[in-house]
Amino acid sequence: MARHLILNAGQLLTMAGPDAARRGREMASVGLVRDGAALVEDGIILAAGLRDIVLRHDKAASAKIVDAGGRVVLPGFVDSHAHPIFASPRLSDFEARLKGATYAEIAQSGGGILSTVNGVRGARQEQLAAGLARWAQRFLECGTTTLEAKSGYGLDLETEIKMLRSVAGAGGQTPLQLVPTLLGAHALPPELKDRREDYVKQVCEEMIPAAAREKLARFVDVFCEQGFFTLEEAARIREAAARAGLGFKIHAEQLSRSGSVGMAVKGLAVSADHLDCADASDIKNLAEGQTVSCLVPGSNYFLGKPYPPARRLIDGGAAVALATDFNPGTCPCWDMRMILSIACTQMKMTPAEALTAATVNGAWALGLGKSHGSLEPGKAGDLICYDAEDYREIPYYFGSTGVVWTMKRGAVVHSTEAPRL
Image (tube, rainbow, N blue to C red):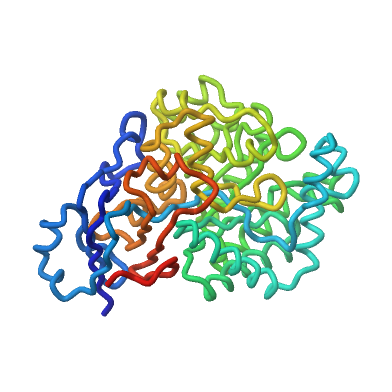
């Protein structure tokens, strides 16, 4: 039986609060406890809060002590939007974009999503799993303890299923918790570019049932955008996901406004992601519904695009999450600290709001809010210790991870120093 007592947390951010995604002013509360402590047994939190209270727990005396050294301790980051399964980076696209090439020009020259598709189709499942496991270690080093892993670079039944199987394979090689999402509707495959109806049917009638049958995916996602998938097609894919017993997520209002937010909220999508072009009616829908607004400003930074309306979403009462959108084409960033910095400096989120968005709201954006994202009894023992005396230092400084140690399910899985026992 593994039992750990984390002591001497100069600031412990419990994120304790309502049993729901945090909205509006709720996002400003991080459950700050000075001289805090947490008790974890067999991967589950038994107690967290004031040191004196935690020490009174009847199992505290027999626990192995982990000394936080007066630093900041908080829940592990829950990264609710990522595309971490690919064969190689798109360096040629990066250079071409810097020289002024447009997305269409890059795609016409053989780059873009389809270049990654070609690489993934040619890779063995074992290669993809090993690559994902290597990336997983970098996420752990940056304090992420739960990560969504989307498919979407296969665009045919065989390769999409291969990608999802690689997530399962990587899960046995890393302590990082991976949440698989089927994104077969990411783009039209080149062989069916003039037969979109055939491909939508393949997604609905073959991919989704296959992923559900093998229990390879928890969610289905779709890129609802001009030139990709229409609102009507996205609705059909959502309905197919529901029939298969899978949750639904959507790339919404990213490059243009499609009206997909209304459909997502009405259809109980767990999250609507990107939202760069969301308008006042979308914000109202998100504030009144249960769908989490998942913002991925790292891609806007990398592409030099305007940022999503985080301030208006929060002030309007929506529940906002932050994620990396890690992928080989538009956001090669796995460090949540950089995302937090961008959120604060470019989208005017406060440090408290940003940290709430990357922990408890990230958990709700993956359907894990009742078990992850905050330090409360009964929840997962996922904690990180930052080399900081004040939690506001986390988004204030950038350029290095700042994570001293990462604990997943009560076990230290990354540390930059010998544990202080």
